Image 1: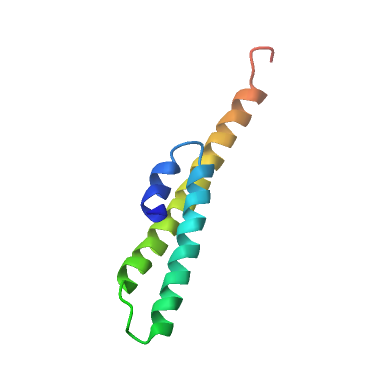
Image 2: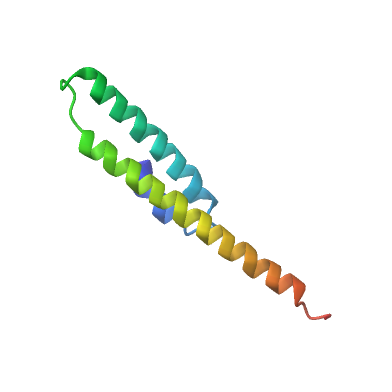
Length: 83
């Protein structure tokens, strides 16, 4: 669930996307290791991998969006109305 939310959360200043993406990556890696340790008794390896990948995507999009907004803010501050 955190993996699905991370790209959408990245649209709000980028930071929530990074947070939910990090949670998704952690949970995906944890689930994949549990599935491997179970020796085939547990399923869902594909879903865990998908959550991990979408979480990484959310982190990247969140960081890029944050950097864009930060650079836009810095450009607006440096060329304010008094300059």
